[in-house]
Amino acid sequence: ATESYAHPTYKEKILEMVETEYTNVFGRARWPGAPHRVLKTPFFIKWRHLSPDETEVDQPIIGHSTVHEL
Image (cartoon, rainbow, N blue to C red):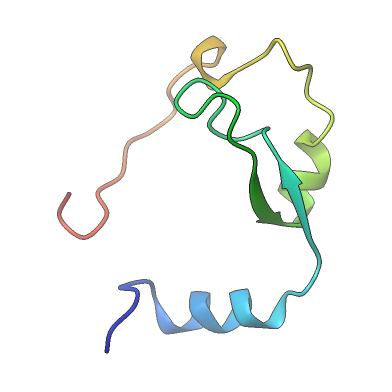
């Protein structure tokens, strides 16, 4: 069964990474109080100490994407 329409290389890289952390840094405005597990990527490490008062609502929109025609 197809579990994800992500590119095969992306899925391989996800499986290679083992260090994770629970955080609420991403999606605070849309999912308040719902921390989730993320990979410890260089991007996350840079933003992991973001002030609890800051959310994506405070940030400019820099692009849009379509995922599986949704």
